[in-house]
Image (cartoon, rainbow, N blue to C red):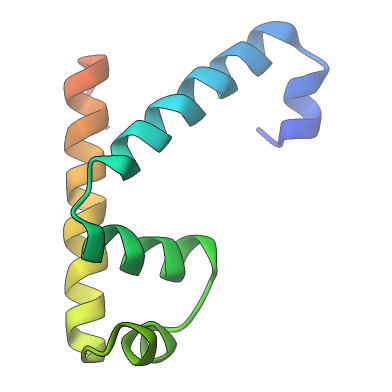
Length: 85
């Protein structure tokens, strides 16, 4: 749900805020390299090549770090909520 739609519904906004807080905790729990690779790829929308250049690693390493980070985020959220994703 887009944030603008959630703002019209207080319950939806509360759920969004809770989910965002949980996601921020999950991201903060990642190892620094995985967190950096994930943030650059997914939040900054850089290509694997651009991330690799910035981190001084190969594109394969970036893809691996992002994949591992996503798995760890999923496990973190499942552990904290008790729900399978």
